[in-house]
Length: 105
Image 1 (tube, rainbow, N blue to C red):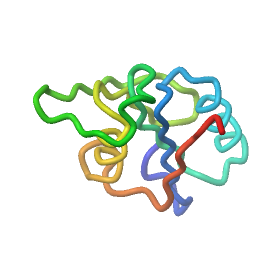
Image 2: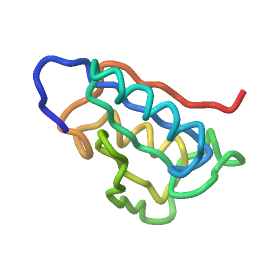
Image 3: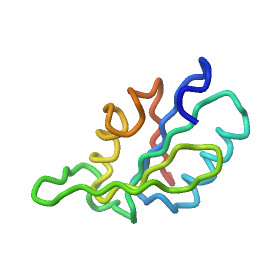
Image 4: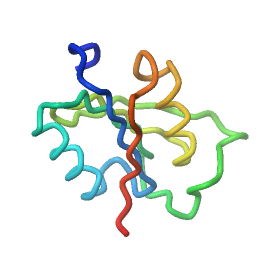
């Protein structure tokens, strides 16, 4: 998915986890427009209570996840870790053009 033409690169993240219905719905809509390269960097599980913290005493793990039409990673870390990794060169070959934080509110 990466490197496809000049489409804007949109990264989706959240604090509810990679399998959250809201994140999956947003990714489906973005992919269906065929206007964006969709990137996902989200916690491996629900992390709402740790939304503003960073991981500092434990290793952060990253697992590639299959989400149709997107390049997606589940991060064993906090939501801040997900955002930091997503805007670095470590996951997606450069930063996204836009970051969207999916929230249930």
